[in-house]
Length: 81
View (cartoon, rainbow, N blue to C red):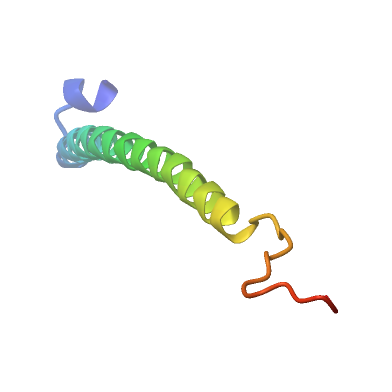
């Protein structure tokens, strides 16, 4: 604040630098809002995909883990069998 009151060349230079710093800070914060939104959106997609992949894996496990039942013999039953 003092740099805006003083009239020296150096004070004017410092005042301009302070204003530029705040402008950059505002741009960084605005960019981070966008990044935060995109990150939350991506996280939601990943969470949803994790759940869907879990369902697929459970379905595949059910297909693989079938009960082994003795197979019925096909053919004629003879006297020696």
